[in-house]
Length: 423
Image 1 (cartoon, one colour):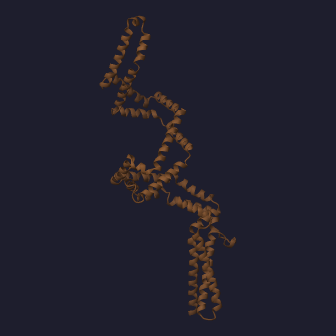
Image 2 (image 1 turned 90 degrees about the horizontal axis):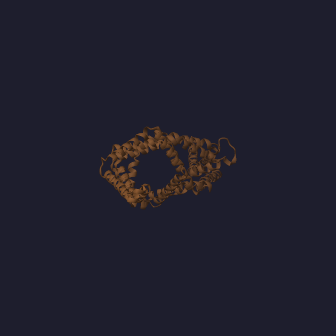
Image 3 (image 1 turned 30 degrees about the horizontal axis):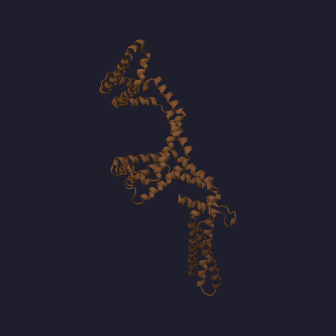
């Protein structure tokens, strides 16, 4: 982020100091060669030595001026003159953007290339080393940097908009998913592995609590529906006691006897329900209708929103205080997972395979989008912006070309003059 900020500031606030300094050095060297040429020209008749100095200075001026023209022609018209094949970068910025985008696609975003590069990496063991010792060398800075980045990303996202996207995504996935067969398969598997028994036990216990809590209601109902003779003789109370005691004994027997006939009937009913959920069109339609009614209920949307807000708040608390996260039981689990990643080759291979497939899948799915993003971004820049950014990035090194051209040109001129004198 800091480097991007520096690039942005440099492109908008003018050339960086290093570029200005190197321009002054290259220009001063060219002017020095011009003055040296004039001095040698006036002194050439005094001694042959000055002829060598003149040849050096003259060729140095030619080399320096040629390289100045070449460097300047990359970014603008030299001296403002519309000379053909100058201002190369501004005139070809769209082609440069397309070329850069195609270079990224052909060399970095090809699934085969990504897979080959990822095969040489071992992200599982690297993650394992960091998780096992998150406070190691560079670990504190890495954790703090990741914490700030994650916190800034979460805070920058529009809470309402993102919450709406979460609700819409969940709703679409649930509407497209037929849950009746899944429920039937889960229930069938539970019955086959006797995992439904705790459910039946819970239902029996719940029925016992309901019976105990509603005894007055049962007694009142029997009293109101009994005849006058039963009420006059008090048999309605006796009848109510017998019914309540019988139901209570029945529930107790069902709770204690795993082979009770009513439990068998309940298991048979669960098996029938599991079959109907998978194979009965009418049952599946009823489940889908109930699901649609639930999804259309505004209360469910409000509940999802509250869940998202709680999840977002929890993630913010975690990323803002990574030390607290790593200090608790969750941190112990992460450290244990890091140790396991380093010690278990099979697990590390599985994680590496997952990361490799994710990277290859991202390149295959989003490579063209990234290429279009790069190309369209460069096309969207005006000529002055891209010229300023490129010149500020590489202009300092290009000034060395001017300096080298001046020096090399002078040496070549000196060599030619020496050969001419010898021959």
